[in-house]
Amino acid sequence: MSIFEDTLDHYTMNNELTENNIYSKLIFALLAILLNLMTGSPIVPFLIFLLCTFLIVYVAKIPLRFYATFMAIPLGFAILSGIFLAFLGTGEQIWTLAFGIGLTKGGINQAVLVFFRVLGGVAALGFLILTTPMNRIFAVFHDLHVPPVITDLAILMYRYIFLFLDVTATMYNSQKTRLGYHSYMSWMKCLASLAGMVFIRTWEQGEISYKALASRGYNGQLNMIREGDSISEVSIKEWVLIILFVIIIVAAIILIGNLNIFLI
Image (cartoon, rainbow, N blue to C red; front, side, top):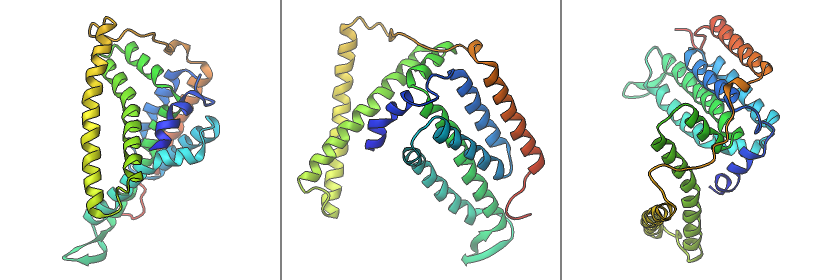
């Protein structure tokens, strides 16, 4: 938790792609996610994952250890989903467990495809998140004429996520120093107390924030300096690279087709 709490904003504002036009990164990420979902073979999502990983680690210079931590939770969900899909799929069974349940060729194909789709999609989204400060993303919301209330809520939510992570970590460490979590019953009591206190602190902070905004003339919309790029400022080189990426991935989708581990 401390990794995200202390260094996520640092890396978004201090990498080799921070100053690149956000629209070029946004267009690339959206196209990568779209193409990632269009393919019926796990090979293309794997290629997208490798490309995005290369851009994040070797071009943007995001530390590999931090990137691995960023990918750990989605990877865990992908593995669990893949296990269930492998047993719940259709087709010829290649290993029977019990009560007619077992691994099937169709299930394994689907599990592998979903696993690599998750990797490719999260890596593409991670490329945008890890290389772009949030204030620029919020500026894009404004440029796209997203309702101001949605943008303001997103700004406040993003701000207070890190605040409450810090509060939660402080209270958790305080409980640990008082011999909390040393047994199952102690773990349950401490966890319940922690959840209750975080809820109370959240409620109190909401009241404090509203009063602070009201005292500064808040009229239902946050007034803030919006720094952003323009899509017209995307360089020819960036357009060429994006188009080349789309051509290569589309060609791979056509050539590979629905190639999977098992032919059904």
